[in-house]
Length: 222
Length: 105
Image (tube, rainbow over all chains, first blue to last red):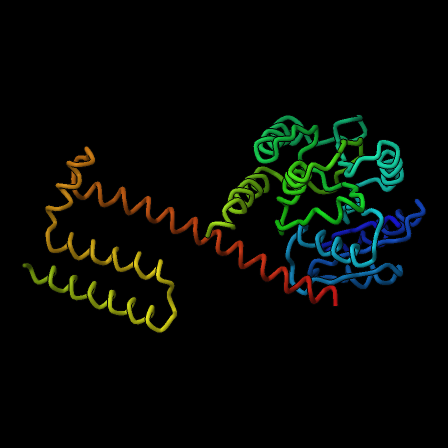
């Protein structure tokens, strides 16, 4: 079975809509990981009948995804879909993504905002922040992707077994790509639509990610 | 020797003894203990013979003794801060493991 993992933090107003959007696509196996929300995110999600895991304190999106992955492994999932809980992704992209994965027989499908023209990014993101992040991503992973920071991904059973997210906050995007390359997993990029309600990572967020990546490199030494 | 030098060296000796005691009690690793003892010995030597810094400065091609002390101190401080950042990250990851285990129960 394909399990959709939704990391969510303070999304009580939207999480119901996100889950129903997935139900409409025929996706019933869902795990919501409530990352220490201060509002009713967990209750709203539980009311829809999906599995809800709860972090007692906020740990970050990377940590929430890994918790979801851990549960999916226990449930013997055939594949997992990482899907943001802020209603910015289009659930119709999941079905297409799974088809592509089965057709091309790759281990990982990575979402990209730049392979079609459905996503309209604020211009500082498009012209400045994302080109820089593509380059930073290349330095840390050796992979030049069209979209270096996209939370939409589909992992095959093989990839789910091998990939372990250790960066708690937003550096997981780069970390997963790095692991894919190190483990020799096959991957391809796939067009996804992102509708912006909130800005996401700005310059400060980007700098924090680079800092986290550098500190992470040294955790084995100190 | 000036009174200030005697006072400072006495302080450094006390610091060294405290570090040695902590190591004896098993509260500090041997690496950390040796690092701190060497640090306090150098501090004591420089306090007893400030001209040593001028000799060291000449050796490294730097202008004044005080300058070379500052350069080394800065590098040492940056290194210590980075090490702390890494340790905090490791602590964060351990907290996440505990939080995750509870979430999966």
